[in-house]
Amino acid sequence: MISLKNITVHFGKGTPAFRTALKNISLKIQEGEFVTVIGSNGAGKSTLLNAIAGEFIPDAGHIWIDEEEVTQDSTSTRAKHVARVFQDPVAGTCSHLTIGENLALALCRGKSRSLKRAVTNTSRSAFQNILKPLNLGLENRLDTQMAMLSGGQRQAVSLLMATLSPLKILLLDEHTAALDPKTSRFVMDVTQRIVEEKGLTALMVTHSLSHALQYGTRTIMLHESQLIYDIAGEERKKLTPQDLMHQFGSSIDSDRLLLNT
Ligand SMILES: Nc1ncnc2c1ncn2[C@@H]1O[C@H](COP(=O)(O)OP(=O)(O)OP(=O)(O)O)[C@@H](O)[C@H]1O
Ligand SMILES: [Mg+2]
Image (tube, rainbow, N blue to C red; front, side, top):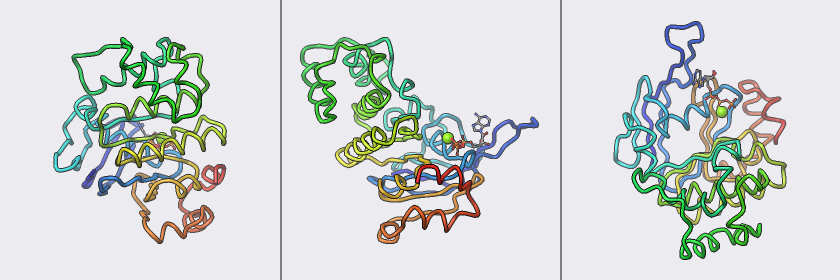
């Protein structure tokens, strides 16, 4: 479970670039919920995910993971529970290491003292079993450098890496935005499978209104640093991307969001 109470985040205090990125956000996400996050550019979506990951201490408010308050905890402390995948497929993996070495490193996430990138025979077969369900043939390419893979393949491996060691929370920030529509659907399906299989609590930022409704169990919208919409259950199932557009057309940057309905 993730709880945010009255979270406010400012950037550039005391400078002309001063900006309130999150304004008094309160939000409770139950264990196993998969929340899609929408809103126009600059609405505060990435800041919300960064606040949960512990990139900075909010200017006001409190954050809990399960019953534990983590407001003052660093990203490395929270890494025991929280994993992230970003927009850029290159960001989540090490280009000069092989697929196997990347997976071996991923196993060490949240463990500061035992970084090992050695791929043993035991881990080889474990990694092959992890890669097989992707149906990309990567299980036969453990010794291939990550740099040789396409963006979609890399993003699929990033997802596996992010969720390899035990975790509770998965944060996805436009992780399919750099992919073509077919590859994006593929990576989304992998995402949904992993979240369900591992019972993760997930937040996914997307500019695709159809993905926002098609995947996950709940959708929230941010607008000008505030939470302005929160829908789940039967009511959400009936919604179409067009409904979202019509309902919020006046308050969101509709051109930007329409691009990907
Ligand atoms: N590290 C930072 N320093 C200064 N300002 C920042 C920083 N991070 C975000 N901001 C500002 O906070 C606001 C919210 O930014 P954020 O990145 O959360 O938006 P977003 O909803 O993720 O937008 P996008 O859809 O473009 O990714 C923006 O005005 C942005 O310029
Ligand atoms: Mg963003």
